Amino acid sequence: MSGDLLQELFAGRHLVPSGIDGLYGRGPLFEAVVTRLEAMIDRMVSADGAEVMRFPPGMPRRVLERSGYLKSFPDLAGAIHCFCGDERAHARLLATLEAGGDWTAATTGADIVLTPAACYPVYPAVAAAGPLPPEGRLIDVASWCFRHEPSRDPARLQMFRMREHVRIGTPEQVRHFRDAWMERASGFAAALALPARLDLANDPFFGRGGKLMADSQRDRQLKFELLIPVGSAERPTACMSFNYHQDHFGQAWDIRAAGPGGAGAVAHTACVGFGMERLTLAILRHHGLRPEAWPAPLRTALDWPAA
Ligand code: ATP
Ligand code: ZN
Ligand code: MG
Image (cartoon, rainbow, N blue to C red; front, side, top):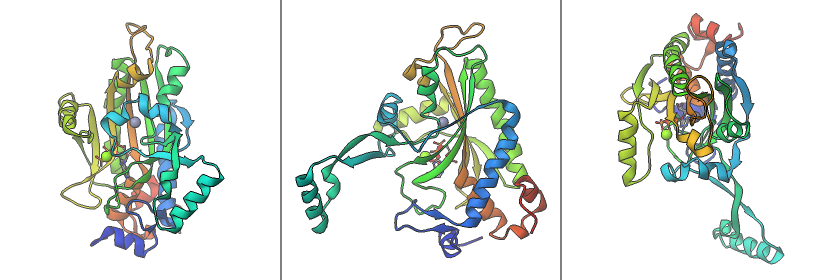
């Protein structure tokens, strides 16, 4: 594929425009790749013994607040608002709508927000289950996620799917998990015949203080990404990420580690995230829109049905 990737995907109905940048429908080829990638990840992790948890794409507002998301990424967050008025308020809403005004002013914030990353609902759920077992916990989670970052880059969506593995335990358990996944990721990209490299990264912390937080995150090597060229060769896209949160979520939710040397200490956490749309786009960008022309090893890795 070449030229404007987004236009090409629209033209082939692989992505379906909505009029809003980063909010698209998906066509049959796109969805088939997502489904087969999910199954490939299932096969890859089946021996890990992770507990499966699935949450809806909305979570309690309280979870966003207590996680510190609004301190770091207020610009990316999305909250749900609902109309809770009486009939007179309804009539005013309709009049505002009729006049082309902002009817959303008649709504109030609900107690649900959109999930910004699949792992956020996991921490309160784990905290509620009491102290960790000595071996810690490993959780397999997936969710549609929302981030308010409209863009014409097809790899930067406002609503997208994230699959994550979340490790909660002692610093040693958690670091070992993240390091092992960084090794595993290169094999995953190779199986998909995708050019990839790992690099140190940082999150886009908001505001003036954000630069300091980003620098500190880099100094402490807390975030790595698996980069694959999608929209641009010079600025490859993060298709997976490897995040060590230290005791951030452990503190926020009062999760306590158990096990040798760790009893009672605040748990550390890490998560490994797969961007399902980004991986799909990487496959379509590098191998084209005709699965019958894909390299045989890729078709085998995805267990793609014979024509
Ligand atoms: P970027 O640096 O490109 O903004 P990120 O650091 O925000 O990515 P994470 O917060 O680590 O990404 O999210 C986990 C995974 O979710 C990423 O590795 C990526 O594959 C995917 N992802 C993140 N943001 C988006 C988005 N806007 N659209 C599609 N996929 C995304
Ligand atoms: Zn996460
Ligand atoms: Mg981002």
